Amino acid sequence: MEKKKKPKVKRNAELTKATILLTAASVFSEKGLDGARVDSIAKLAGCNINLVYHYFKNKENLFVAVMEEVYRAIRSHQNEMNLRSEERRVGKECRSRWSPYH
Image 1: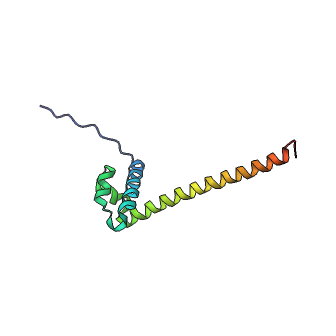
Image 2 (image 1 turned 90 degrees about the vertical axis):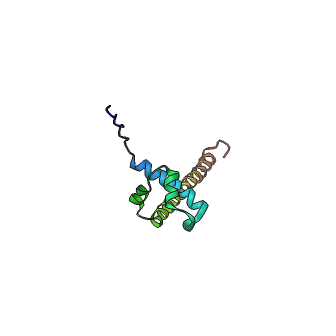
Image 3 (image 1 turned 135 degrees about the horizontal axis):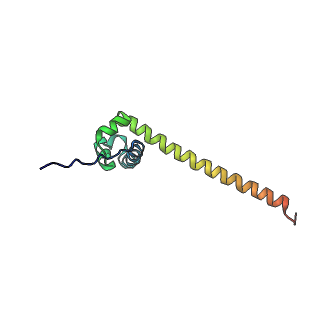
């Protein structure tokens, strides 16, 4: 009887890295750097622990990558808030200049 070969699953490195980062962020926030375990992060992310080490080399680098992503998200949110604030300011200025009751 001939064995059927399993179809190869195409891996998406960026998706895997993003999943690891999201999972690690959750674990680090719950357990801290010292309490987090790379094997737990890999298991929760649904990947092999070797992939975590392949992408991030060690737990400290993974932690730094998580912190960089969190900071990037904070800066993005801050920029959006600044844009909205500027839009409100410009909108008020335009309304006051072009108001027929000015």
